[in-house]
Length: 176
Length: 458
Image (tube, rainbow over the protein chains, first blue to last red):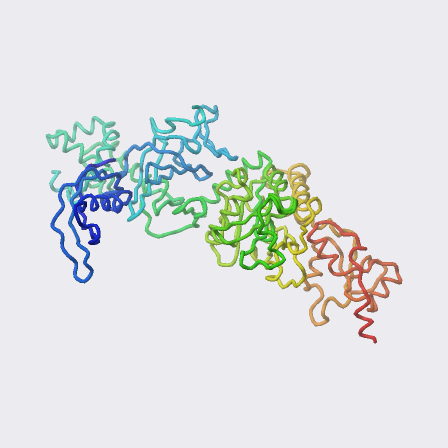
């Protein structure tokens, strides 16, 4: 699920960045530092949408660096247990399949794939129904339900299932 | 029974995630409208009662017994069923420390790590067995067995760029100026500061073997090296897929094991040049003659002769080790599927391997002369064991049924006897070659010279 929230961060800036472009430099550094990172509390920072407030800079003893408290608005993404997500399949094997929703790695075990879908090995391993009408392979898009999450400092792991109504393939790359 | 007293109705764990979970699960609790009405009567508020039911769902059976006294029997049964399912999960494996069946966080780590398939993936032994059992049926149906391939000295030979000798400098020249035999099989990997030579016949070998086997790469090199080599061997990613195992993935140090190979051991064959790496799975192993192309590789194994690279030559393609082993694999595959009786699932490729091995020197009676030190029991010597595994009968006594005398020196009493009786007198290399080639070798190729005894007598 996406959230638009306000976060705060202390930015350390080298004196060479001071001058009339101070603000731009600060924002550019903030984007570089924060976008794409993951925090256990808020999830994955997708994008910074605006700066709320930049506080007064404080010169650090000894280094000449100045630290600015910056308040910024950003879009974060955090999966929840029970949430329905759409994800792209990255790898299919005997154990099940792995999918990604942006930075989130989701594993769907073969226990949680409908029983009528069977694993087919080969150079393009896949799960297929007996009549061949539905196929999950690499790059398929699937709709799945999250049944467990773990948000680390740098990664988000999820367990998913497609063994429920209205879950499964939503776009099959082979048929396009 | 009032809400305030109920132990399950505490708002302490009211975090956002929890709220969402309850909201998302709300659909299922509406399936028992009768109970809901009752509850609603008790509390007078629909919303409160609903949330109470939802909370109860996650509580254990004990609590349910207490709190559901006023509700109907059916309701409590349904609830305990739900909790029973949650308790019953055997946690067959985990991804990122969460059970991949119920999604629960697991505190203790159990099972085997399958890092080569995906980071953070672990499977329990029962689950591995289950996967192997379902997979073997499908594989056998498609007439496929499993083949585990070693890299270095089996399929290819690599050297560090800075270990190359002056005679090997010519290999560094641009590809089009290389001798024809090297084109397409010699790769310079500047990023890894290495040069790799694929063994002759490798392309045909992989193509034909892939039709009979599901193939794994298993190397003692690190992960980056293993993936790089897999890329050279299988540029179109049609043979190995995610089945590339490196030393970083193994469960034992300095050992290779089939525990992380998702194939039933009775259907796995291994090609490797190092017997000691497979201590537990010697019966699955087909030992390969080492492929040394570069000087540094020869040097590493104590050979001082010129390397293939220095002589600007290579192993023979149609008669090399890979062509030979492919032929053996075809024979084994054919015996396994066409000649063995009984259920497919009960057949064991290790037995086939043993039988085929026993055919190699069948009918030979081998006697060793001054090969086995008199201090050790003869049947403990590796050549004795090797000859027996190859189907030969070994003997210590001179007798007319002996067909081959194995000696290093033609001057010994037994050697002279062999010459006189017109028996084959062969070098120990004859047994070793038969072991590598899986065929009886022409005896003339392994003559025993008398030079050593002459110098002794002079």
